[in-house]
Image 1 (cartoon, rainbow, N blue to C red):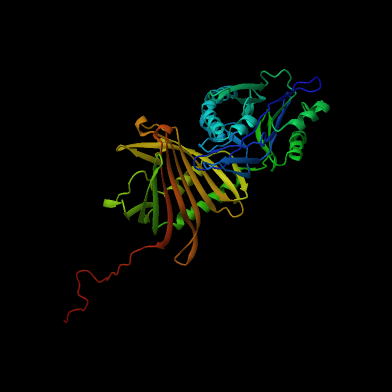
Image 2: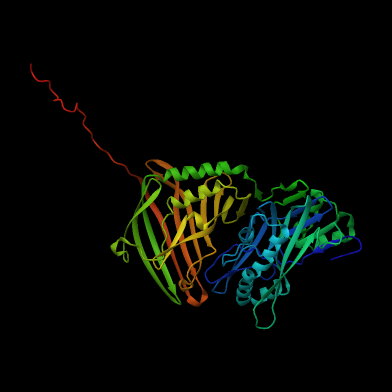
Length: 502
């Protein structure tokens, strides 16, 4: 909307913020959730302020025709290199898409804002198209009402270039006609850049109320006070509480740099030392233990599902796992593929190493199903060889994105999730995605209550042509210490115990 009273740029973004996963389902905003997220960016010649809400509304369409809806509070701001990125639209989906992680993956050290934005513009349509195709197949009415011929994702990039605060916005627009696939087009706007006035306002997500207010109050364009940005998104909080809400995050850009001025649902790195200490305690708790490990292995080919139950004893010695297996198909002490070991110590140890690196700001998440949590995201490269996959007797190191959830109240580790990225595997393997997820709870070991791994799920996804999926579900129990007792007798070497008579 451009008016004579104020320079305003609005993207009509029907927002999907999906956080649920279900078998045979695509997570998506359902009919009625045409919008979500409220974002306002106000620019001037030497200052930029951006505010965004933190409410996520996710809806999953299940294979039995039903759907499930969930709300949660989470951070929609990500620090990437010297820039901040605000996310409105399809932030996550059941096929593993995560807009925040995609932005981190596509950034290269030294990127300018324009180069970074161009790479996002080129790469992300290929990830968005299958999500929307699946949504259209699952619920055509929801697709037509919320996504057809509308913006479905918008990334706002904020930073300093040439000693000048700058914003670049990448918007992805979906269109579909007839029986063809959904097409995604992208467009870029920037200020300074292709904006006609340095005093501008950009609105994303829910913005009808803010748009009307700007028409009658044009003086807000160029007013980069925090209150002005919060006031604009606050109008949507009041009008649409079902899809907009939660603590607001504010990013400010001046010639001195970009800063997270108001955290909202995002957290800064000040809390990392406490989380690292809690993780170190959990690692120490499982040193030198013996554990019962019960594995249910599943392999699905078309409509046929094969399962296999296996029991194992695992020893953790010096931080390394040693496995002994017994079960229906564990002949020779080997577990049939696919399988991955390392949930007892390796996942925590690697996560601890990665948390010691600069990974960007923490985020906070809350939902009705879980306790409030601090979430740390990180990326591990293939060169580090933390996670390796064997295919046809050949070993392939995996790069992966990780997330670790900690209790906001106590700092206790709750969950770790790894997802392999940039898979460089032979095409014959047909593998498209690999996930590894672990949860934690307290166990009694030698009379002490300590945090230990509780369950783990390892899942291998294949291309749709393979019509195949494999996964294992593991439960840990019976934690106990082990050690050795040795009796030694000492005497004087070479001399009898009783002196000889003289």
